[in-house]
Length: 99
Length: 99
Image (spheres, each protein chain N blue to C red):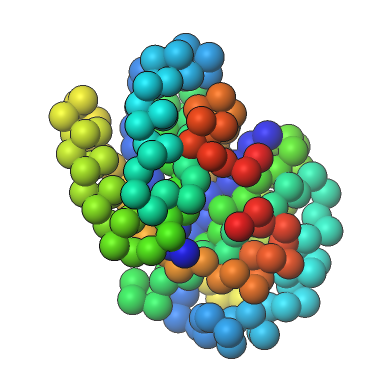
């Protein structure tokens, strides 16, 4: 499994309004090849948003990252920070990660 | 629930060796007040490591972050990037997040 960490400056709607606005997008993301899960992140104080994704493999992750970066940029988002990590599954199991 | 995203430059052991080296630390972290889970992240190519944490509330998260930052710095880690986020639980549920 591979983890993708994305965050970016964001001054759009958050909370319940964001959930309504991005309901269809979330349904689409849930069907992405190789996706295990996405946690949606938002911070109204710092005006940032992003996501923590777990994918089954690097190939699926990289394909998604390329597509999603273009999608974000086409909606006006700049300053996207993305990082790819391996998951240490042994240590994560000790700290109760639901993987 | 609140999410804490931490990453930093790291040139120590990873993988199985990291799991052995940090076994006791992981057991200690698993008992931290308010912790829901931690996913341990590592990237041998970029020489970075970190963690994705979910806490029950902001107070527990902030207490942990302060303690953990000092612990990392005392072991020689510099350049720690930490970000705190709300979790959009509605959208995360659609994208299969195990929360």
